[in-house]
Amino acid sequence: MTIRNGSFLARLYTMTAAATAPVIDELDARLIELLTHRPRVGVLEASRRLAVARGTVQARLDRLQARGVITGYGPDISPAALDHGVMAFVTLEIRQAEGHDPVIARLAAIPEVLEAHTITGAGDMLCRVVARTNADLQRVIDALVGVPGVVRTATVIVLDTPLPYRALPLVRAAARQKVAGGK
Image 1 (cartoon, rainbow, N blue to C red):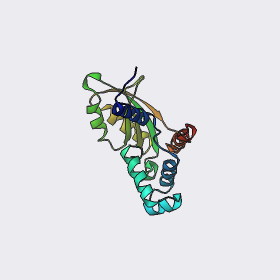
Image 2 (image 1 turned 120 degrees about the horizontal axis):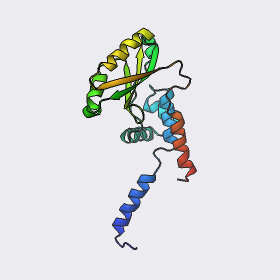
Image 3 (image 1 turned 135 degrees about the vertical axis):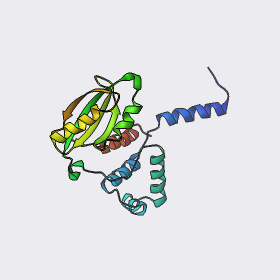
Image 4 (image 1 turned 90 degrees about the vertical axis):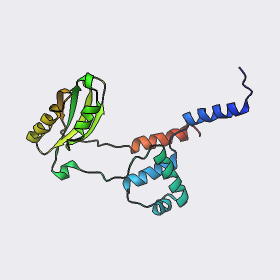
């Protein structure tokens, strides 16, 4: 099939190229790594360390933020340093008729709930929670069970975190994909 409309072909090519274009390149990866290790570095210092123009660093940051790759610059907080040394993952089974939104709104009011995810599998929601002690964890679990819409919970206590949350290996792999793809 031949399409003779040149502007249509240009738009089609642009849409296809944009859909398959890598999200980041090697410079983006280096910038993200620098910000991960030195989050308070300024744009001018970042440009010096990366050996690129300040405008390039600023444009890359703006683009990475606009595309949702970089989502924040807040400090990482240690719950253990705030006297909450017990961490657990709690699976919630919720009453389906009420939905997730009312449950999430009430979970957000419990300070010990660090994050919540809707999931597939045996439960409906997975929460990462912290507590001061194991006995205090019981109080947190009781608060979760007391949320209207929560039918039951299952809890797994974290013993150690040998591999904490990380994203740099994924950033490096994404940048390598562009190099390997020859783009």
